[in-house]
Image (tube, rainbow, N blue to C red; front, side):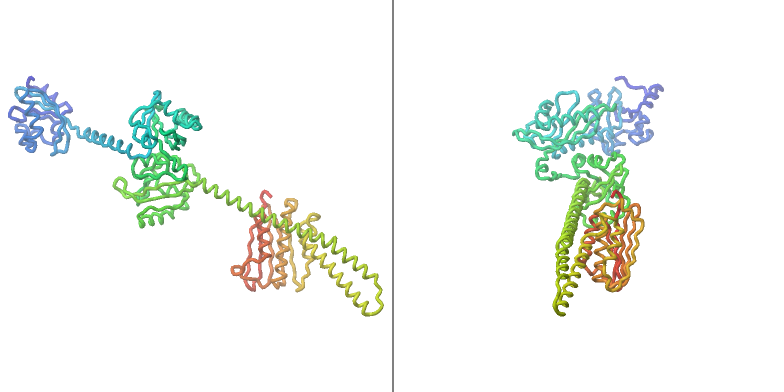
Length: 593
């Protein structure tokens, strides 16, 4: 190689313009030229090195790899290329050495970044291989347009018994392993994902094992697209969920903080800071559950997933978690991006993530279960109301039958007996006295039967109105203590009320009046019956001796009132205390009645 003329301006200009570092050593290792790029890379000024032996500037390299490579190139007069690490500067260099009769020319560049990337890539490849071994699912990929798919890890053998590892299989072979009853639906889902570009699809089906039996599998399929947005590949993870399917439990993950297992978990999972609760990482299942994108989720903290009214209570949960420093569970209300409510079971544990103390939070959606529980509760209440209605109707029917029997049979017998007694002509005074006494007794029985008949059957309902029935009820009651009754009925629109409801209101008033007459020792009774557009109110008040509402259990009378109120969703309220009388109100909502 012809020696360079460093005194030539064109040569010097060229060497100063290149992006590589360059220096020239003579046969005695003296630096004769050192360009500005070499200054920057090696962090030494040219005036401090030109004219000096390079090994006096870098004594730690004398006799080592740099020295050996330079010496070999000079002695053999053959150019050489090598990469070497320079500990003093902590950099990797890529060097090309060109020998000549007068020395060697060295071109070099800083490749530290490339070396770091290569190291990172090796580590990532190693991690990927380890992840494939560690994950519980069988990983596969399918390049669109080809007739084969690639089975990656050993789990197709471990889970399903096929001795195929890191090898392609025909796509038709995979299709043949899907249970005949599930095949059409599974293929439809794959076609829909490709047609509509769904990023992820999750499905369950039965997969034939090598021994001929079928396993239930959960498969998550991810669609990969190129820069133009065209689908190019499907990547899937197939997990055996036979135990979960048959026992109603999910497979437990063995390494929760492993990044791939976290991302592919069937449960929604979140990692957040222990102090700030800022969301640091979120898996695909959580994105699907809440409806946020990855970027939107990472801009939130855990407070933002709760309704505003419940965010304050989260502080106590966090404090408890830090104190216990162990896994804990509880139920909480969350909100989706679109505002829909979620009921979630939260399992949280402390962990270290990227060198920080964090919480790993697993979330299970119980919204549907809560909806079912509410439906069951509604059915239970409806059933209770139907039972109460049937019992009340049976009571009314029984009272009606007793009233008919008393009026049409016993009352007639007594009337006939009275007429017969009137035909008897006694011969002496004693007989006349006994006869008059018998007549009086029979008349009393007839009057009592009439009174009972009226109490068993509201005399005005069905023929006149609820208002008339209430007034008739007041007139029929013998107020022995001289009680004053104040009745006011306002804006009653009976044409909007069904017959059963009017009978219920009548019976409530009748039952409470009976209670007052038996127990209250009142002098004044107030009855108010009023109706608005959406509500009918019943108020019965007395100034009697009252009772302690909290200490006294409801008797038969009040229980009857409560049952009748519940039948039509009435809200019963009783206010009373000793020596302060009693106020009973029932509010009925009339909307839709």
